Image (cartoon, rainbow, N blue to C red):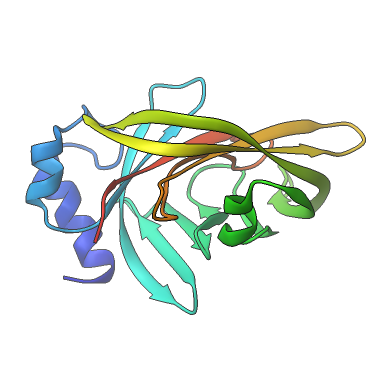
Length: 194
């Protein structure tokens, strides 16, 4: 099952008769029964839990969607765009997953965000990577041994930190990334793999 129909079917399977996207947390067994990749997105400072499934994948760009069509786009595994989340991240220039996984070095990030007047505002950040160490994390009831990488980004008037948890295979299992100044940080957990 592909695309948006897959996302809609996912929402109906987990929450029949309820509003899609934000709902009580399903169990790992509920998620595994759907037999599709699933990510869990949590917004810092809220109780919001969004479950997304992939709707397209082309040229290293993956689009994931809730059943009510809120989407997150990942470019080479890194959050690049959002839609339907409020003050959306319209586009960005980010490091690739290999750069982040290395856990060392410097790079530049840019974010283009729509402001309240539907005008595009660009922010530029100088970022540095460090390795925080080895850490065991739990994602929806399952433990994963990971290497924790921290990305610290600074501009003249703003600073933020992104975090990444990589498995020994190199797979990004979990990340905490800035989705824009008004949305703030979101934690993205890869719950069910392909």
